[in-house]
Length: 412
Image 1 (cartoon, rainbow, N blue to C red):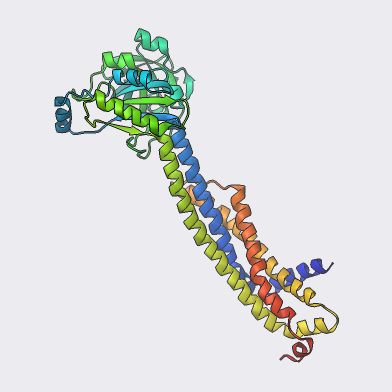
Image 2 (image 1 turned 180 degrees about the horizontal axis):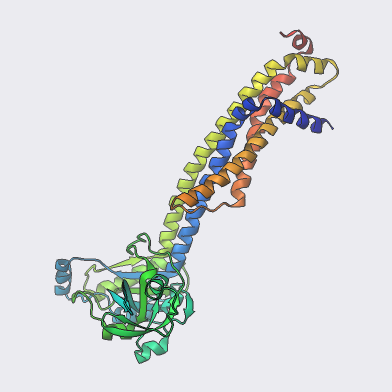
């Protein structure tokens, strides 16, 4: 009954002094909202990073042709290196322990036409294992298989963006499109991808939705590279059994390629899993700093509560004296004032939760930053606001309880 009465009196005090109560709660409101917003931004960034590197394959090692000028390429070719080749992929598959599969790819930028429509696209020749290693999925039709590769069939799989640009509302499967000067049959359309909208390691930014995939055997026979000095292939993706020895395996691959390329550094090695770990460490530091800033806001809010509660003790000195005179104990007085502080904190915390959710959704809606509100973020922020209320309400409550009844009644 006593606690229920204390809560009722505290709520009535909030209603009777709306403006003062609101000012008291401002620090808590903004502190809780800041914690939720910052953690939701961090979670959104984490989800994007995981999705990005999962698409690259967390067990993969990617060897990419190094971008160089024509003069640099001529110098490298003069030193006997022909760049990345199918032979490199075969040797890596044979020598490196723990290799599950390798996928080679070659690329060319060219025009793609259907009827009177034309788009610029990156045409990529790939081997069949590519779809599993890179976690690609088809929205319709099928992906390139071993039969297409072995028989050199002129088929292609479209990225979601190029399929929409060329066919709009028409069905692309079974249609013939013209890539460069070659007619190719569409056998599949990939699900929409967001990868490579930013540079990942040494992998240049690119919208994968505009890519078109063809069998590597067809690519090498039918499409000529824009620059005759370019490598036979532009990328080798090596899938390992696990992510435990990626660094060691990458060093062995580097040693093999140096020998094959006569010590010419005309390639880059990217380990998506290591990039993910590095990004995770950077994000943890970032989240810690943001959390610290938000925690400071909550502490400031707690100081505000303490100041107001101390002022309230002074205002209600006679009331405290009368209560003590009619039999109230020190614990009763402390309970009353701590309850008032907690009620202010809980009310401010609830308003902060609502504001934090609104801010998180607003950030996601009006910016390129994706946010993800996790229940633990709400519980942490709200729980901290309650702790602040109890902590900073204790000193005023203790001061009120220690007032002598006779002096309190005489207080003017």
